[in-house]
Length: 334
Image (cartoon, rainbow, N blue to C red):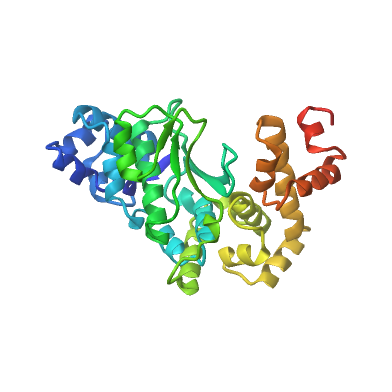
């Protein structure tokens, strides 16, 4: 069962009471114990929390309930992951940590960083998605993408360069509510939900970062990851896969996440008959093949998604992997 920490509805009681509603009654209406409204670490089925927001928005005639929730959310919602974020040296490393550890908070939320879908220069897209049912739950999506925006503001300051927000779902609140919240134009009908941000956003330094605090928080989060990631090759592979779009794949970065020295990591990988460069190459090959054969993503976007500095590197790698160009692989001529 897909779950989310009850911190995901932090502030729900206050929002409902400000609207004259009964938070406990609304929780019971969707089958939730009202205790989840006052605790952060109760694991709850994600669809129940989504239903709570949808049902409450309807009952209270409050179409912008999700945005109101986001306005009350701070980094403390993320628990130990918040410590990692504020103590990361750059926003890129913070985003890589989010991709790696977000499952601690919710295992159905996915984020990513890639080129701007419209191809605008010096612009990137930070995507946000939830796997909750066939149709995106509007209020939960509003609360989630709103929280992403507030997180960026908290770790970098209000002027982080947000250019526009694109929604993959039809909002029920007036677009002016979104424009007031985000302070930028809002576009609907997108293939995915994303924030358009400066391309160099990932290199923004985070003031006051403390590496020791970050390492301790990451060590704790690693200790509570699913058991299938316990072996060093598996954990290294998972980290590379989850962070490839955010930071260059470096052994020092992975070793820091695993709370071991680089030589120790190198030795543990060698003991299993592999190495860091091989793992990175394998992850890139599999990721590129998936994008080429299952999506229509442009080649320059695929290059960026796997951490290549230029499209020519993708072409050389494809010839080495499959003896064909990326376009030939895409058209099924291998």
